[in-house]
Image (cartoon, rainbow, N blue to C red; front, side, top):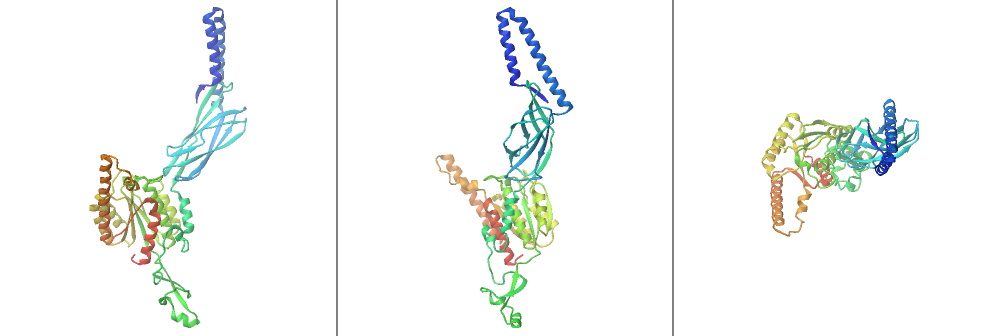
Length: 440
């Protein structure tokens, strides 16, 4: 507890200074000044000592924090504080909650008066800017002493923790649309093709638009009504995400980093794939190593969420050959491998052999994030030589990058090269296309 003089204390000291000025002019005021000095010092000391002793015996203020067990990334939420006045007099307070550096807050500090023996509930808004486990260490209270001559600075150890997850609310919204009838509202295309899937699902009455090959003639002859076979996409397949945690995923074109955009896309595609009856797994490379083997069931989304919520990109560069070798050791069954990364043209010498190695056993889809800031640099007007050199270097970089992707496509590798905000829709479209093609 650290005491500071209040305004009232400075008023007394100002009065003492005024008497001291008079004493310097008229010696008759010297005894008055000495008496006043003694009285003021005694009052200040008595007020401070009384407040410190009483607060040590029984703290005047108690605080309890109402902190949610989890916070969504980038979404505003309320945090509550219950401040209880345990003393026998009204308290004028200033309350400040010490939140982590990864949090933005609004509404602090809060000034209020609490009657004796009463409590007050206050709230402030926070926006989490980084995933992971965050700890709120203490609450700082400023209150006045008994005679209001001192301001006491109390640091109450009120420690609470919460986990910051990717914004699953948006995924929940998409989940409501992720059905056969509503995927188109997300921009996801479900193409019709002859046969409508690979696996037989059920018999039903013929509908206009059904292909003749779908008609079950034996069932039709038996009940004297046209009956069609209905097929569904193959189920019980396995999808494994290979997530790049290297330094390039720290790139940021809007409020979210490329890594956070990738996590959002990964979670929504996981939800769609699990609804399709597939198993979903996850492996990371170029940073902290994490592995979640493919699992089925909607609870798997929560398992993935718990695996990646505190995962952050590191300072390493991606080693695709090492990642491919480790994946082949961990997982033998043929699966769809979705590599989520941020490529450079210099990666081709390492990337191509790695993908060819994976393709011997698995089907590979490479999803790469474009850096929007690089494309935006081309729109900047050229006004001098440095601008011209930068523009030429940007064009050269993009040409080399395009050549790398053309090499991948010409090798028959499924590739996506999209901006971060389009990754989710394009990735699900690619997955559904692969499912309908039957190549997995």
